[in-house]
Each structure stands twice: as C-alpha cells, then as structure tokens.
Picture 1: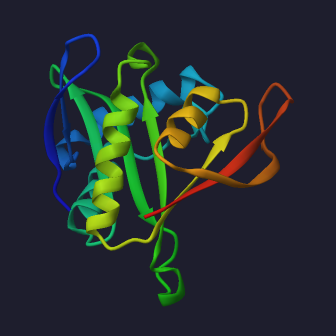
Picture 2 (picture 1 turned 90 degrees about the horizontal axis):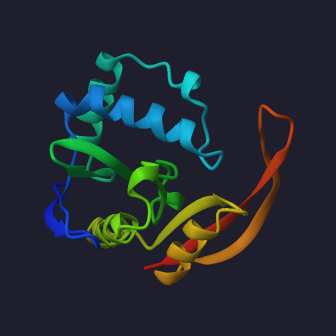
Picture 3 (picture 1 turned 120 degrees about the vertical axis):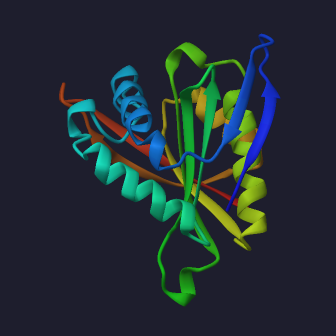
Length: 181
C-alpha cells in the first residue's frame, strides 16, 4: 500500500511521510539501533538488531509488495527520523480482521507532532486495507505514548505483567491496547 504526504511539524519543519523502500534499508537499520538505545520502551536493545542491510532490504521489498502490511517513515532533510508499521496478527482467516502496530521516533523529535501524523496515516491505511481493529502493546510507564494512543481512541483491554525483563534486572509491564475501526 503506497503512502506519501508532506506535513509541517509543530516547529515549522517540513516532514515527508512515505513508505520506505529497499534503498532505505541502511537508514532504517540505523534508525532502529538509535531508537532502541534511547529508551527502555522499545522491545529490543541496539545489539539485538543483527540483520544485514541486504536482509533489511529484502524485508522492505516484502512489505512494499504486501497487500496487508505497511510501513510509513517520517523523513526530514532526507533522513528517516521515525518509522511505523502495520503487520497482520496471523494469516489464518479468523485473524484477518486484526492488525498489529508499532512505532519508533528518534528522541530528538519527540513532541513535534510526528507520532500523531504517522498514527493518523496508519489508521487511514488500516481502514483502506479492510482491517477492523488495530492492536498494540505499550510499556505501562510510557505516559506520552499512552496519551497519544488514547487520543486516537485506543483503549486498554489488559495488562501483560512483567513482559520485559531489562538488563539492569527491573521488569516492565505492558498495556494491551486496541482501536476498533
């Protein structure tokens, strides 16, 4: 599913929302490594991102040709600074109405409206793809993300206790959230 839109952020900066493609693989990997190191809210640590540029390029090609998955990146001055994606929960027929969502935004760009812009684009894309609900999980202490999701109508429907065990030994729980489309 193709997506392209020019937006202006809260600080007046121009930003392009678009699908990443295979030539963006190295930039996507750098983005993933950076955002995974900036907060404990991400599912992986930077050293756990081990795919090669070629593997990421193949993955991006598969997303680009997929009828039911999408990635949307935020690009400023040619640099990917945020990325979000929709991925089917499962390929079985009973699951086809559900889609999972994930997002990462570089810390230097938090609070500029990128999360809202990408989430709006993701919701629009999910509707166009025929999904009936978007699901996500979020660290229970991630107040900024929870407020963003609730602002778009997501509701908490459960908690996964001690879902993350961080390297320093502490645990983080996750809220399970969904938005019915």
